Length: 408
Picture 1 (cartoon, rainbow, N blue to C red):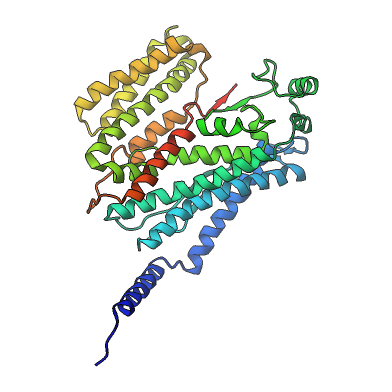
Picture 2: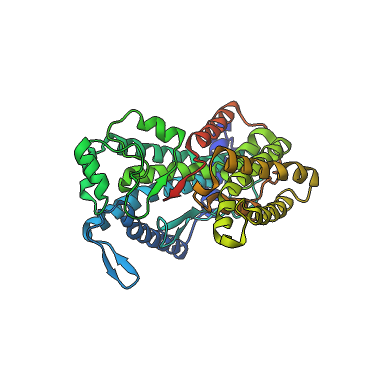
């Protein structure tokens, strides 16, 4: 008769579990080639498009509607792409390896190239089976944002620690008034210069970015920050992390907060947060509608408000599953708060139309949803997981910007 020690049984069980994990998530050569191809296309797209932002701007060649960067500009674009895709890769593989660890079937990251904006729509993975336990849901949800945040934080610190002096702007094409100001004062201006040539892109302030910037000298203003590859990639990394940490539906933040506080409490928080997003959307979209309607609207924007009210009422009904007690309270609150901001706290004629929160209102309503579907087995998290979970919610607050990108 043979006898197996308890330790040998544990080792055997672990080996079987490891083999199951490997076989379930063992991509074949064709799958690897497909995902690698998407990565290469995204890297090229971000390098070329990113060179428009971080490049010096003097070596561009226009062939019809296509603008090709020169060698120096392209190298800076490649640096930016390397930094940004490092963040995306760590974020998505954080999810991937957490899923593999819990023996959940998952795809490799799908990188999404887009030859406008910053050259990409990001990257996603597909969870190919239902997650049954809270611990699994939490671990998979939080691994991506934490990994991506750490990488973005490091990128930003390296960027701040190696900033050139303000005279560095003399290397960029255009910006003549800014160059003159820097040459005369040796510092950056505190406000956008009134006669700044072309479109000015102002990136939104965040608590963490501002806090870190306060420890370093020669930090460029947020309307010149996009010329600096490390700062730009770090800012986007932190902001994209915050977007993923929004505590709604199937976003990472939705998984995390649901695991922390349960279905009923999360439903209340998620609906209130969604309503806050609709307030930001109204602040953006009402002035946009007013500009588009022109002479057909009143000076107060009555028609614009009517259009937004109809849209808002419709999406809230969908988002709240036609529970009218929620709609009847939060619909007027959202409209009132948007109006108070536009007509009391600021001037609607000065508002810069943006689609960011309008897009996210529809994205949450129709794609990720407001509420998180319940898992099969809801189990309280360990103290360690709870601490990490609430830290991730703090990261969301520190990295989010309510007005992330403004163009003048």
